[in-house]
Length: 112
Image (cartoon, rainbow, N blue to C red):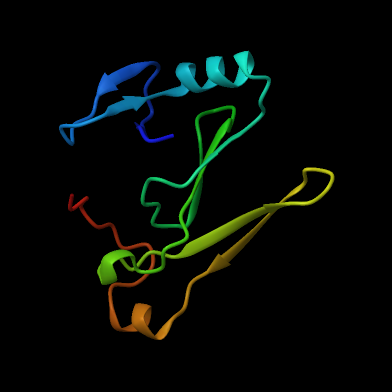
């Protein structure tokens, strides 16, 4: 999904000036119509590497670029599924480059 998401119900124009922002009801309806339990996406910077959204956790964003643009200090994660569709998350927090930049968990204003 290319659009960003927020803790809202439906759709609103993105404050970044392009695209749309969607919310919980849109996600629930999409999952119901398509018979899905989870939307897995990787478009939006997540400081903690992985974040489930909305009350029903029907969407997860996974971020796998460490210390994005050499200035965000973010951790990364990989979400894998076994043959029974059980989830396993692996987090990666330390690299030499990250130690020299901002630490994990530091909030960075979106710079695009």
